[in-house]
Amino acid sequence: MTTDQKIALVTGATSGIGRATAEQLAARGHHVVVSGRDAERGDAVVQGIREAGGSADFVAADLRDEAGARELAARATELGGGRVDVLVNSAGIFPFGPTAETTEQGFDDVVGINVKAPYFLVAALAPAMAERGEGAVVNVTTMVAEFGAAGMGIYGASKAALVLLTKSWAAEFGPSGVRVNAVSPGPTRTEGTAAMGEALDQLAAAGPAGRPGTAAEVAEAIVFLATDAASFVHGAVLPVDGGRIAV
Image (cartoon, rainbow, N blue to C red; front, top):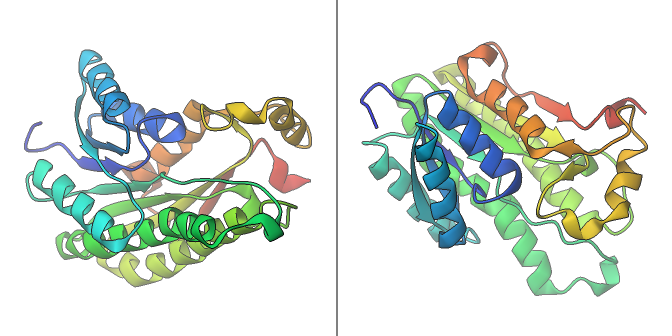
């Protein structure tokens, strides 16, 4: 890591969209703090980034509560030489199923990882960005935060909360130079969605693109919002859903 590198913390970066985002940010010169639960996968991501000429470290984190979020923020700040310039909230879980079968623990897990962790990571990191007069936060939401879908209620609701928080944080921190935006993916082929099988293709067929997206395609949008290319973008929710928003 060099003194002029920007420091990016990417949660959920051991697979899927988070991993693709970490790799692309590193390729653009950021020092990336890769965060996730699986140390073996995290180390593999870091190794791949370093072999490609990039700079990265791994921090294990199980983001379910305020303490875990603040601990990760502190560790990332330490690894970043006292600062984090970019926060990408990509970690999330997406259990599907009938409302009547949802357990309280399952409900709490979704809210903890999808809402509470991003909330307290922003609480821990955005004020220091504001003091420096610059920074970027990108939240990863979902297209089902925008419409009702059977069996996706708690997942969609948790991400709808993140959409509102994106706009609220943009209003709160934007005047101090911190840009807060979100990317809203549609059906995307990742390790996490592999179990959906043909259902993923069927869901994607409803959009103009007619196919699922890739993690790399979503990551390109995240990186755009995280960098100076989006210097005049605040509080936006960018759909990367193959056009599903249009139909």
